[in-house]
Amino acid sequence: MTLRAFTSALLTILLGLELPAARAWAQAQEQPPPSKLNLIIVEGEGAINNVKQRSVREPIVQVEDENHKPVAGASVAFLLPGNGASGSFANGSRLLTVMTDQNGRAVMNGFKPNNVAGQLQIRVTASYQGQTATAVITQTNVIAAAVAGGIAAGKLIAILAVVGGAAAAGVAVAVTRNGGTSPGTPAPTVISPGSPTVGPPR
Image (cartoon, rainbow, N blue to C red; front, side, top):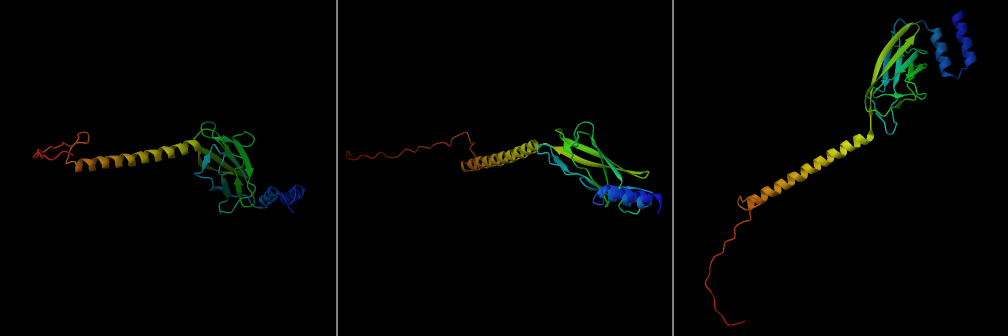
């Protein structure tokens, strides 16, 4: 047994077989080092984070080798912007580092968006046995109240446009029926003289 295999077996026993991180690390030690890393964004690209409800879509990335096989035990760092639309993790930090599981995947857990609306870019760096790979995940922080207000205002404008159009159509019909007389001018009254009639008193 080589020293690397012995170390892997020893750490697996010490940490417990039920720990996914321990199994992933043990498997990584038994595999030859990759000559290249690929960082794939599985989920989270283009996601919209509701600032008011604190609802977010947690990014998931996958680390692969040059043969597109998952790399277990790789270190993945998620870095949030320092200003503007951003957020923080559970400990208040802008940096979160996790290890990939046996499927080569890492999840950015505990992200809380700040109260600044706008687009943010999450920089991701994967490292494993001297190899690195980078990627950028773009998301957007939105304020739900602003979105709802914009929708309500748009509906109000549409309603006013319909009402205004109906009023204009009514004016056009009135003008046509009055023989072209403008809406503000009443139609002329014509009085024709007739023969007087005399009869007994009533």
